[in-house]
Length: 153
Ligand code: TYD
Image: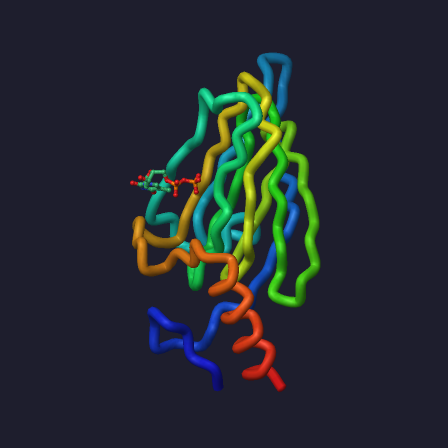
């Protein structure tokens, strides 16, 4: 079985899934609660970060992760997440409401772009910040995808 670079465990299967959260709504407004190890957050949350005050026209990301699992939620405003899978398939997801999430696992090249002025992109992550988990070079990403395809044959 193919092994991951960082862990000795089985490789994380690359995955992107749009998720919608149920809100506890009443006449006071809305509330969404996220807990780890649920169908909405299928990992233990080790890190939370958020991106805000984004300069107009900025494209962030431009990297993949080897093992990280992340759940992205634009809790204010809107932004677009472009995901490229190891088979080359590219999909854009518009996150424009706090009840929409995007789960990204494993080797997926991603860009975050088209941020509205009021956008706050919240990210729940399965691991602490580890530079070794990043693939920042696109040609290295393509090489790893190729390796993954060969390993799956
Ligand atoms: P960067 O990887 O450029 O962000 P993005 O993927 O959104 O384009 O991160 C910006 C800076 O923040 C960089 O110096 C690394 C640092 N950083 C942390 O210290 N901890 C974190 O959890 C993250 C995501 C980034």
